[in-house]
Image 1: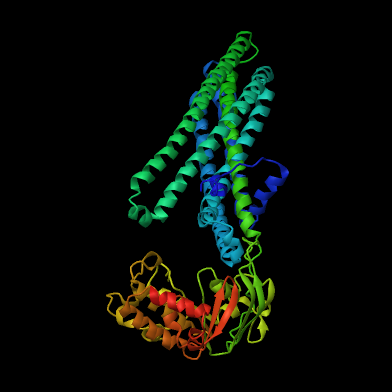
Image 2: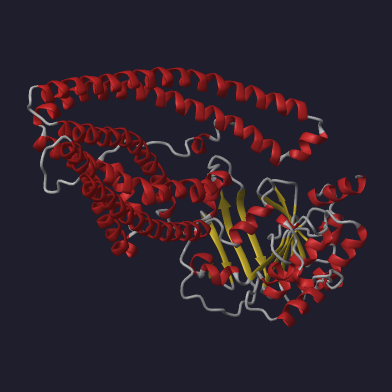
Amino acid sequence: MAKKKGKTLEEHEKRKLNKQNLSKLGGVFRFVLPYKLTFFAGLIFLLFSSLTLLTFPFVAGKLIDTASGESWLVNDINAIALILLGILLVQSIFSFFRVWLFAKVSERSMRDIRVSLYSRMVQLPMTFFDKRRTGELISRITADVSMLQETFSTTLAELFRQIITLIAGVVFLMATTPKLTLFMLATFPILIIIAMVFGKFIRKLSKQTQDELAAANVIVEETLHSIMTVKSFAGEDYESNRYNKGLNKVVKVALKAAGFRGAFISFIIFALFGGIVAVMWYGATLVASGDMSIGDLVSFVLYTTFIGGSIAGLGDIYGQVQKAIGSSERVLEILDEAPEVSTADFQKVKVDGNILFDQVRFTYPTRPEVEVLKNIKLDIKAGEKVALAGHSGAGKSTIIQLLLKFYPVQNGTVSVDGKPLQEWNLKQLRSNIGIVPQEVLLFGGSIRENIAYAKPEASEEEIIEAAKKANAWQFISKFPEGLDTKVGERGVKLSGGQRQRVAIARAILKNPAILILDEATSSLDSESEALVQEALDELMKNRTTIIIAHRLGTIRKVDRIYVLKEGEIVEQGTHEELTIKEDGFYANLVKLQLVE
């Protein structure tokens, strides 16, 4: 199971900083373009902030020189101290505007990315969702976009700031103290090479730790999704032990990584401060020989501190940009997916409800080796009520999915009112088809929102009328909050019968020409079943109705029954015609259910 989760284990997988990968980050940058003026203003404040701060070490050095008796533009140490405070004040103002402007750009552009990502996601075909897990897709719109937000609000600004500090600082030092600067720069390559070797090994162990932690999290996800099963089998201790073993693996790898990280930090501290001692020793010899003043040495030390901080910061920023490229790649992957056929130019049209399946053969894209439907022929006239019967996996639900155009028809033709599905506007087609599923999953809002989902502009009277026709008003009116009663996540605050009646009210409000019933009464008690069946009878009036039959006794009154076996229609006729067939497949199904 953990392997299956593979794609989501590397939530912030790093990418190399090459031209191709940076172009992916640039692909997301188009969402910043509407706010380019604000972004450039932020860059200007960033430049001013960085350059202002870089004047601080120079003036601080002159303060020391003035105290030592050397002359400068200002020879009063109190005035120089005030200049230093003024530099800090100006730099603080520039920093405030830099942070605020970048925050404005990142918040608004990330909102646009989330909206675009979600809009594209809900428009993608079912084949896309068949290949991906829900958790992975949620991660794209949360973790990946959050990573991009951090990049655009903080990381890019820090990258520019550190580069400005590094370049300007080295240029200034080369101009003022060239000998000491060259001595200092000579120590950098050794530190950088060792840091890169250590860093690569530590990153590998860190990634292994993340993978093990993600594998342990899969156990939590599975357990919480199947908590009823876990409890019914008294598997609490087993799951706890399984999770404990997973975390032990995490701890083992993490401690190994911590050992290497500790050794690396210890080395860096020793080498860094050793380098500082060497630079200060050489600087002290230059002061002693009169080649530089004490103030210049102080300025040099402060500039070196700034430059060292920039180099250390660039390492972290480099890793952040790598992660951002990985996130942008995953975001663009969805944004670049082709949506279902455009629903533009939608106009409500009257549909009679004639349905024709002509020699339809079908295999799911994720299971191309299994032919689910074989040479299906259905001819359903407007207003007819037909049923699809057969064992689970016979292809009943697949027929409905093809009718709804969830998947393209590969062989044969499916047409509604004589018009092939590929010629229908997708929204136009689906707006004329209503579904009452066996397992109703309501949205977590109010009853009103769930009923009005079929027709958002519906009036209060229309919603109440639909609820009355669905036999739902009798229980809705008893709730203190009426239609505004919250149904809870997935409708858990309502009983099965109540959920079914809300779903029927929604279908009634939609007023579809074609109705699909996935045996909406199969899991209800007798009283709820009677109320729901009465509501369904009202709903089926003057509509083409397709019933997916689980309990065969409920489809006695339909005009025709199509019996499916392993993707083929093996029998068709009325209930009476099929039950009297000796050794008939349908007759055998009826006998089996009677025995049960």
